[in-house]
Each structure stands twice: as structure tokens, then as C-alpha cells.
Length: 486
Image 1 (cartoon, rainbow, N blue to C red):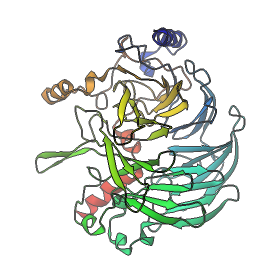
Image 2: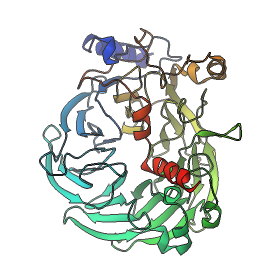
Image 3: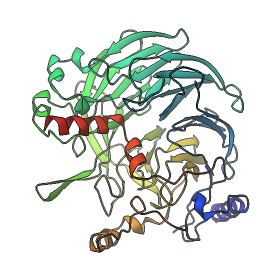
């Protein structure tokens, strides 16, 4: 009961100090959450993508597309932007630094990487920032690369980069303190046969590191585990759901977008014996039939990394339209803290699962409102108190950072993800749609989710063009190459 009153009070407090223009994508507090569970607060920050949180849970750091930001979340009911750095490296001949979709933090060192996609005019590399004073971040260096960078992981002074475009789409390890590259590893180091597979089907989409072991998400090629206890000498120790180069050489192999491939994000649990693998997929029309759909998160026992065993799967939320142009409810980025798995599902919302028994994950929390938010990630800030979830925004609501209780509960407007919503979409007349990703919402209703406080005026929303940009470079590259091959 106290939590319910606190949430309502927090939503009311947010409503008192927000932008009042519906054209800016403002949304207001809901009043129909099923058991009182709902967002604590939110702040609007244009271009929001990834979010990471300081060890003390007081500060969040955002990738913004055209820069980065720091946000004070010490009071989760009133998150406030401390600093925004737009158009960094603008004084360079090839600047400014653009398409920054990922940031990572280690101690007082933040890195921002980009550009997220190939073929973009921008410096390519790793921007290093001292955030010992989050209100006054100081850029201390830039490590340039010859390839774009979609994702990275920072472990102390070593930054692990997705080196797509370089030979083999390698993992590239950089010492950001010394500004030197120290190692590379790619699928070609395992099997030369991968050279005959289209690069888009073996894109290194993401990398995470825990306790000296790196998990590399290689799209349709599977997830690869490397011992990086000596960062300059990565050693392969195991593969989860390894793809077969011979199968992937076939025309239209797995489409590069439909299940069962698309290893998008992988993360080891504390202790290193369990690996979570998220897959990002959609449905496509093939010979008049719709095949595929959204994918979830699979849990594997990797205590013997050379012989992984699948334990269970967390299914994705339903969607009225599973195609790329529909309502996205496929797995995106996630986090694990102790016995809790925190997941983000784009318009499918955010969830928490009890994974104390990895073979039997138990859903404890689900909040979704597909017209209000398209979540990129879910990350615990202060365990047991609150988590943060960055939203890319929708056509009806701006991008920004949301906070939620780190507790069980359900809420939002999940009816739009139901079978009834699917039938309504199917029955829509030509030119008519029920989907905010296709048709803008003119004026947000008073029953939508909490209003972000203003940091920067919102753009027109997350439309079809920027939807493609919101994906990994792997998908765009895969689709282009598959079309070319066909």
C-alpha cells in the first residue's frame, strides 16, 4: 500500500513540472496499473539509446546518438540531467562524433563508441571521458579505429570492441589508458570456412565481459566464449549454439532476421556457470506465408563451456504484428544482478525474472505501454529499490530515461499487445492502422504513462527511418548483402 501511494505521489509530482505541449510528445500519469506497479519517474533526453549506472546507483550515463549525457537518479522520482555533451569532436575535420549507440562505465572512466553503423561520416573510435564529476565530464582522449563500433564493453583500462568491417568481424581489445590496440580475435581464428559466409550473418553484434570471460554475440554464427584473463591473449573456451558455415552459405540462409539465429546480446551470470543469450528477430513474408517472429532469452549451463546445455527460455511478449514494420517485442539488452534477470523488449516493455533456479525462471514484473515507450535496456540501479530503463521513444512520446521499482508487479497498457489487438490490426481498412510506429499519435491521452521532465525538446518521434537506425548494424548489413546475393 505504501508503494502504491508513493508511486501515485511521484507521478503527480512529475506532472507539475513538465513541458505542457502535446506536440512535444508529452504523456501523463496512468491511473489503471493493475496492482499499483508503474514508473517512478522519467526524464526526457532526445536520442536516448543505451544506459549504464554507477556502482553507487546515483548516476546514469546515456548514449544519445549525437553524444552522451549524465543523469542524477539519486531521487528516482525526479531524475535530472546533469550534463549533455552533443556533437563531441566537432572541431575535428571529420567531426562531429555521431551515431553513438553505446556507452560503458568502469570506475570514473566512461567510454562512448561509434558510429554504430558503417558508411557514416563521423570519426570512428572510442571517446574516453573522465566522469569523476558527473556534472562536468571531461573528455580525456580518443582512440581512432578503421571500423564503425556498434557495441563495446569496458573492463578497467581495457575496452572490448565490435570490429565489424575489419577482416573476420573481430573482437578488438584496446587499452584506453595507453591508447593502443592489444589484441584481435575472430571466427576466422576458429575455422577458415567462415570466410565463405556473408559478413552480415556473422556480425559481432555485442560483447560483454565478466570475471575474465568474454561472451561474443556473433548473430547467426552463435555465441563464443573467450578467456580474456590476459586481455592481450584471448583464448576460445566454448561456443553456444554454434552456426554451421555450410548451412549459412546457402542462399537466404536464415534470412539474417528470423529465428533461430540472431544472437544479439549475451551475458554470464555471477559465478560464470550460466549464460543468457538474447536473440533479436522478426517475422517475414515468404511465398505468401509469414514465418518467424520475436525471440526471447535462452539460459544455458556453461559450467563446462565446451559442452553447453540449454536450461530454459524466457519467451518474448506477444505482438499484434511481428514484422519489422510492426510492434517490436523481441529481446534487446538485459542485465543480471544476483538472482534477478532484468530484460527489455522494445514496445513489449520491461520485465524482471527470478532466476535463482535457471532451469525455471519465474516472471515477477512486467510493465509495458507500447505507445509510450520502446525500451532499449533494463538495468538495476539500487537493487531492491529501483531500476532504470532507457526508451528510444515512439511516435507519440519522446525518448528518455525511466525509473521503475525493483520489485514484483504488473502494469501499463499491455492490452495493445494482445490477440484482440492483433485482430484489430488485421481487420484495419487500407490506409488505417492501430500502430503508433506507423501512424503518429496526435495528442497523448490523459491515461498514458508518466510525463518525462524536460531536458531537450523532443523530435518528431521514432519513425520508420530512425527505426532502422535503432537496430544493430548487423541487421542492416545482413539485409543488404542478402538482397545483393539473391
